[in-house]
Length: 447
Image 1: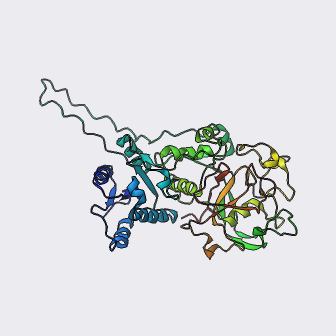
Image 2 (image 1 turned 180 degrees about the horizontal axis):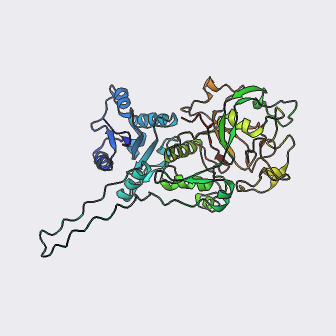
Image 3 (image 1 turned 120 degrees about the horizontal axis):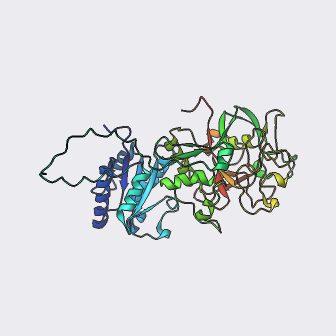
């Protein structure tokens, strides 16, 4: 029986003499690091494929892909990796990690695979292997010490062994940036890998009015209608979108890739502004971050908001029993958000439009901030017409269809930063105006 804490790994590769030798070395190192590994040593026939792969993937946490030009175009490897990606989306696996054995043309790599963080072994095997192991919480055992001389003329008196030192964290616990600490962010480091946790606001269970009344809201678009009542359960939502500082810890751990360059925005420039929302993040990147956060914190409740949850947190006024057009009210105000009319042209730090500022505050009735402008935010929901029905397939996390985006960005005008505004994007798209926000189940209901 495999222990509960043993990393269970499926290794996917193409069969050739060179690839088999590389894979054998990698499998030996995975096992030496403590992993339980499944690998096809002989090649699976078409008749056995479904059964063998189902058996191999059953109960696995990770799929490691030996990436070569042959493997990325192999129909068998493609089926293995795509099956694993579906399992990751359904939260039955933790991740898919490529290790590059041979340089591979980007155009030959399937679009769904390109966002995956790769470990490049084309120049040096061991650094790539060690990075891959760290991503799975593993490490190579220490090399045995050199043997002592056979005899010595003097033997010292025995000395009592020193007390064992406490285990060294994989990464030193960082200090939460002072500005974020002042906004209520905290650091958790229970597994040797630190994570920053945002302040949360509880949204109570109950009905609210979703969508737009096209006669009342002259900026409304057809895909926001009809307007109707909907019941939403209790949940907690992050007060702010995920920041660069939060995301950088997952990048450092190897759990997510560095955000790609988009326009003039690079990961290097983003890291100079740790209290800004992270951008250039695809829906798949957001899911990878959340998978890491759940594992690292042990809290197992983090996820993306559904479209209905996001909209309730952004606009529902429980006192007046009305859904506002903007989080702060029905009239647009360029001083309460970072939109095209504001003329800022870059992201602004989280907390720039606080609820406590009567003149510039942009918070929703619940106190959730920056849900208008700054960055579009991914939701878990597929982009389907209203009415929103949670069990009609739009919350299918395996689907590769477009996902709904909410909130508008710094480059969008007043129409698109309305609380009912709906955008959409392919789950692999990572633009310089795309970010995300976290939710958790309400206290007492987290499993």
